[in-house]
Image 1 (tube, helix red, strand yellow):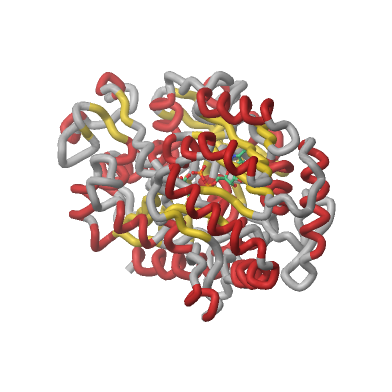
Image 2 (tube, protein in one colour):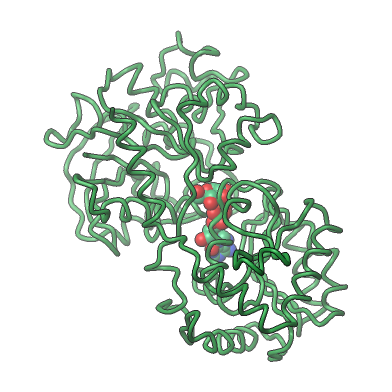
Length: 484
Ligand code: ADP
Ligand code: GLC
């Protein structure tokens, strides 16, 4: 089975969020399954960061795609044997800033072209005109809107025999652009239609993928149901209802090479469920590093997140003075909405010994907050899967989450019953409101006081099987089903 995994980011080459974690880990996990006979190659743009990290790369083809001169280069992932095909075009991809936006967070205006090229190359690699003469994929696995046009190009332009899957990591991002882009994107105008890639008068990359891909998947069973409703479907629920039989929800896993407290190279001390004392040392070092009181008895609540409406963290600032009075500490790492960044910064200034706020993207600090905190807060309004709550479970940092998407599928609320049957792993906020979040945090603090109960909750989470190995198996079955 030859699989082309097309994505716009993959850890450790380039990362803005969970999609990178998945793209870095899932191909590796599938290729290591004993039942998998074949190979998976990753396709992504050659951003500057990718060129700096890709191992031993060489140019294998020069092509013109959507009027752009591109080279295809191949190399290996820095941490595995997975082969990467990267699309090199300096003008499109080698810029300062992120993969989607500039240094000020403003989306690149030519994103339709940048990800049109990614999608067009993906489709070409699955066609008789592929520049890789000897490697024709049986299956292409596309991810999110950035690769959503690939299934459309495959059906409309390339008459491709390759089967296609589109995975939805977040339906809120749809890649909708002005119809003026039609010509440049070489999309046949006849299909700029409700039964095609048109969406409310615009070209929608995601809708194209949802319409033309053979099968669809998303990153948790609950989110698969939610996106078929008006509350969570962001307008695409109708289309998803018609494709319900082709849609599968598979929970993400965690990459144990990167996220394992027993081996995590970012931590000053490693620990595991049976040697939990190391976690106390990490907490102490984290408090010291962040300028918080080095008080082992102060409950430390961690946040690592994009600061957007999705994540519900705007519910937190108004509660913090009260929680600080109760002795709580906060270690926050997040960037996004400037107003929310400012609220957390103001609280950090007001309570320097109890609140720490860091903006920007810091891989090392994110691991230390995950390991050094006692609780991890994630009250998302919607959450396709969420990886941080999974990391919280693995790190003995019980998550406080809302009851949605992958959070609902991975965290079990602590009650008398769930404590008794050893399924309690965290705390579930009933409603996404400040009042409800406060109640749940207070309940969690109550359980934390009882060290025996707390160890039990930690242990349940730390022993839960959330590795990619178990999630890779259903993906492989889904691949096999798609090829039938
Ligand atoms: P999403 O992809 O919606 O942002 P996930 O929970 O699936 O949410 O994944 C987020 C990933 O990004 C996690 O690996 C998390 O640790 C990481 N992350 C988020 N914000 C930061 C940050 N400011 N610095 C470092 N890592 C971050
Ligand atoms: C998206 C979602 C997040 C998910 C990630 C990886 O960024 O917001 O919930 O974990 O994709 O699938």
